[in-house]
Length: 115
Length: 174
Image 1 (cartoon, rainbow over the protein chains, first blue to last red):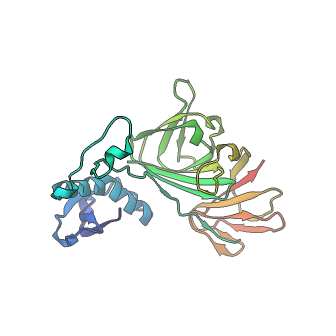
Image 2: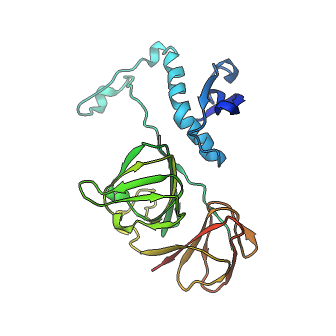
C-alpha cells in the first residue's frame, strides 16, 4: 500500500509538525483529511528514507487504518471469517474476511560503485 | 515499530539495517541469524541468546565494528536501549530460481571485518567488500556516500582518503 503525507506546518520550538496522511489511492483529496500534530523528536532526520519510513510506520499506519474503519463496507464486500480444515469447494462463492499481513522488511538501498 | 532493511548482494553476503526507538524488543530465529559484524550509527542495542547468560551490548560510543559471530545461527532476542540505528554484515543465503530459500546452499564462508583507520593505498589478497558506512570518503577519486560498496579486485590498488568524517568497512573472506 502506498501512503502519502503533507506537512502543513513546522513548529521547531516544540519539535512538532502538523501532518495530513492518507492512502495514495484514497478517493478523497489529502487536503480534506484532518491534520494532526506529531512530535518528530523520535524520527531520524539524517536521511529522507528513514524519516519517511519512520513517520509512516509510527504515525501513518494507525491513522490510515482508522480512516479505513470509518469507511462503509459495500454489502457485496461483507465477508466472513473461516476456521478449521480448508475445503475449497465449500468456499466457492463466499466472501472471506481477514487482516492482511504487513511486510515488515524493506529493501536496503545499497549502491554498487565501481572503484 | 522497528524499521528493518535488507539487501542481498549476490550469494556471498547480505547487508541489513534496523532503526528502532528506545524500548523496542524483538527476536530473530537462528535460521535467519547470519550476522557477522554490526556497526551502530547511534544508540545501543542489547542482544542475547535466550535462556543463556550470554549477552552483548552494542553501542555507538566507540564507533566500532563489532564482531557478533558468537550468535551466528542461534536464536537471539534484542532490546534497543536507546533510539538506535544499526548496520549488519551477514553471510549470504542461496535462493532457488523461484526465489525460495535454499537452506542447503547457504554460505558458510567466514569473513573478517575491520574499519579502515587511515588514509593511503590498500590491496586485497582475497575476495573483499568495501562498504561506506558514513561520511563522504574518497576511494580512487570517487566520493562515496552511506551504503555505497564494491567488491574489490585482487589486482587493483585502492587509494583511500577518509576526509573528515568517512567511515569505511572492509570485509574479507577468511
